[in-house]
Length: 176
Image (tube, rainbow, N blue to C red; front, top):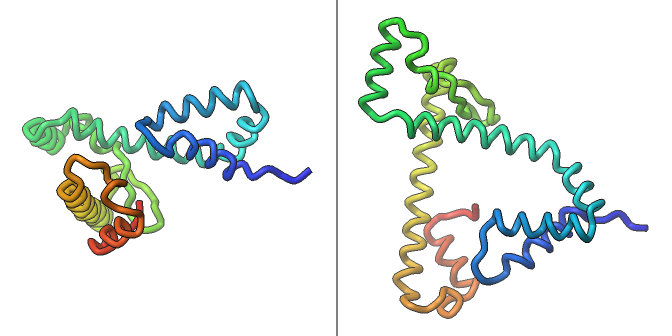
């Protein structure tokens, strides 16, 4: 018996649920898992086992992203300034949520906590945020242009894939 292509089969299951209409990634995931638990639990187990390292890697990324978001959301500008002043005055805990927050610091995707960074690390992080902001602005312009053209119609009624691809690339965007 030929070995199954777990990635292809999972992709097909997902694409079948996302081909049209409105959906959420959480809802699609729940539906696919429920279906596989009842119809093909061995496939689900094998697919999960093959992706275990990737799942743990994604969880690490989720945790560090969550830590950064938490640090940003829980600290207003005044609070940040107060925490910096308290830290400079010797309070080692004042910036703890910031100092223990990890960021990618080089092209090899290595991470460091903010408290362990030096100037080159900080400049690399800043550069990444600038690039993200530029990409976000370009994506916003792309979707605004689509909105202006389609009006009350759907995108599919106005454009085909080739036209969208041409418009997308004319803005210098790369697929996500």
